[in-house]
Amino acid sequence: MANSKARKQKIIKRYDKMSKYYDSLDSGISQASVNRRKLAVKFLNIEPDHLILDVGTGSGVILPVIARKLVTGKVIGIDLSTGMLDKARENIPEEFRGRVELKEDDVEAMSFPDDHFDSLITTYTLTTVPEPRMMMEECYRVLKPGGIFVMLDTGPPSKKHGYPIYWWMRLSAALFGYTFINRRYTDYLHSGFEVIGEERFYGTTVYIVVLRKKG
Ligand SMILES: C[S@@+](CC[C@H](N)C(=O)[O-])C[C@H]1O[C@@H](n2cnc3c(N)ncnc32)[C@H](O)[C@@H]1O
Image 1 (cartoon, rainbow, N blue to C red):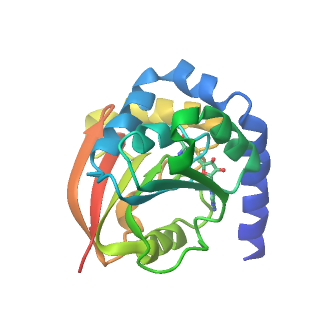
Image 2 (image 1 turned 90 degrees about the vertical axis):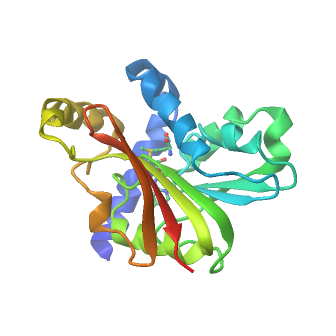
């Protein structure tokens, strides 16, 4: 536990610092990764009144993409780093501000009630958190039965030809602090989720998986 607390402090420090240049680094290295986030949002099947959670929102890149599809609904972005949340606040265009909320919260111990959200999304966060299983448990808990959870992240390739890209990515990931890109989401999957779709990109090292909470 103490170890996990220390790792969280390290994450906060790293992302607070990185918040100043995160967006330029991200789009500079790969515009494709920015576009892939937009593709991930499409799998959420957003209705205008939905309540949606972005788990580990960072600089909130996908929040306006979600907010533009909402009318009475709302998207909440949570993160531990206040630096990243401040950046996210700057990144939300005025017209969407009424439909977006930003909150300092721990994805491994969320402050929301059970069965609360219509859908959940997370992009490049499973590879960052100290306790990925706790994150997945929490995501299961706060999602309504029948709700959709879309995950976009990197991981070991599903096909052999992806390994050269994977090793290159492990190097570049160090720049962002994705310290655990060797994680496979299947190792942390809550049994109450069913996989309803998976797409692989970039030599199969990047995936979008669509999960549904049973019931
Ligand atoms: C690699 S960034 C991804 C940010 C954003 N989703 C994106 O696509 O650019 C990972 C984010 O997860 C946040 N994070 C890591 N551990 C967390 C935790 N336990 N609770 C909340 N946020 C966390 C970091 O502060 C960071 O902003």
